[in-house]
Image 1 (cartoon, each protein chain N blue to C red):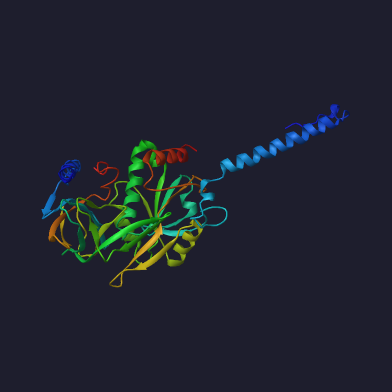
Image 2 (image 1 turned 60 degrees about the horizontal axis):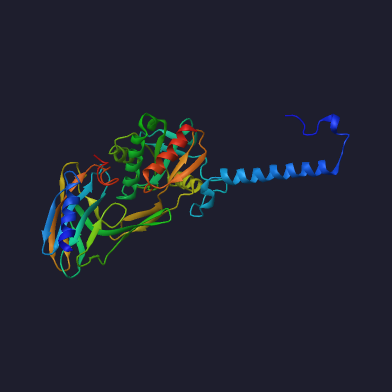
Length: 213
Length: 157
């Protein structure tokens, strides 16, 4: 980068020149603000997600379906779509995972350039083997994670995921939970959020962007 | 009008492969009852179908039961922003005169609680529905792949 004011012309100070510099400065500032507004994730405007001020994501330690430890670092290297649910969820969870299966298929060979991650919000019930059995119903590899109550609390807090047990008759319970799919890039940075019921073409665009980034 | 509705439903049911079953009881026609396969340890399942009322008066789905589950409930599923909430609907669901009640993923559904065995692909599960006017009807929920019912009924195949 060169200086805006070359040395030899510094001896001709005029007020119009200074005014010009001020204008350039202001325009640069304005461009910066506009760029920031455009680049700022859409997520930032959605109050329904209550995460840390700097967006969803953060360190976590969980256990996969084979009993292996998986951390946020383990997932680095491939973009991922992460969804929180529970194996006894009869509707939105299979629907969402089915949609992700379908979207991956539509992406063709690029579909495997993205990990699909399912995290249980029912760690009391969902042991690694339960999640393994559940995910084996889907005809595509899905990383299934669970943990202790404290580990699940940590990741759901960091990822801005709401969940609450709701008792049903007979001593059982169901779980209200955030059903959005969060998209992270290959460095583990939050990029976007999508819903299982949005137009598949829209979701494909989001996933393409994520994979091509 | 009603006749057209039934015709439309009959045609619609033909579009869902392997799920063209329609059961009639009085003024009601129940079509394509299905459920998703479940994994061992997964103790609940959802039941889905379309119930058309060809009569001149409203009916109501009051309750349901199945030998395959400890308990069967009628549930609603609603999205509150991005938060999914599921609730029992203890008062049942109305089926308006010349109207249709759809039980489908993302909406009202039957909840099979405490499955006695996993729901295996290709099998069917008896489900007895109790209606305020039409009385009881037993349908067979066809066990479909977990991906069934996505995007118009063709994508799961």
